[in-house]
Image: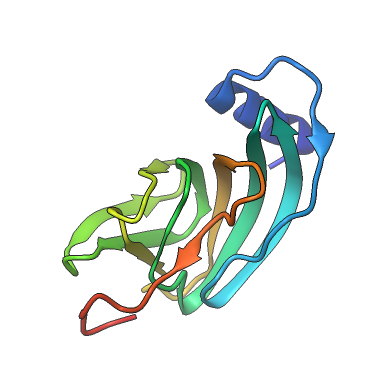
Length: 144
């Protein structure tokens, strides 16, 4: 995704039309995961972080929850998503949007069960200074 397109995505998802100031980024948990921070800004007590996340075949985000809402777009591959009941709560393909609720009541995992990398553009909105994700133990599922 081009830089201008990324900024347009963020502005559209957040409604931002004001200047943004940079702050430090935090790592994303998981196995077979790599992430590039595209920008990281705080506005009015909310931190907006846009990352390009790649899940290798067989990789996963690990079980976690987010302190704030998360929105993303699948750029490539197929993301399999599960909630804490071990049930699938979505399969997302290239071009599809994914939204995740915030809080410890929504523990989940994203997995790449395919043979090609999954590439996501993900926007995190968290209270300034908080982690983007909080790792938690496997809730009892046969996979992680």
